Image (cartoon, rainbow, N blue to C red):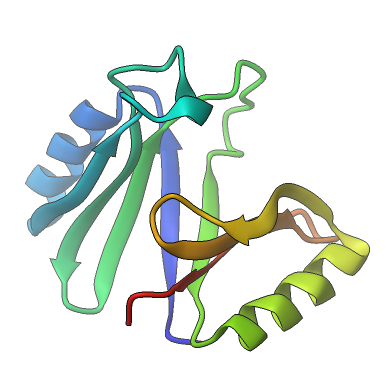
Length: 133
């Protein structure tokens, strides 16, 4: 495994990025809006991904909330950047065995293999393997 990053889902991601940048410093990178992405049709103008690089080893991911049944307090996940396809498959299978899959492990439009699983303890894990390494 390469890293664990906190991914925050918030109302009005653009404002949250500005706020957290003012609080912690750093640089906003890799922002992507829902515009033109078929699976996010109807959510134009919302952020599907953004990053605040506070230091080289301290990064926050932020996204807008898309679920209509959002429960305050359930708006974060731990994102693990994996080292290989074998590793992501193994970890995904182990978490999914006793957990709940919310995004099946699959190839994505951003060039990664990605999946999201809530484990049996209620922790949501985003697993990601970037193929362009």
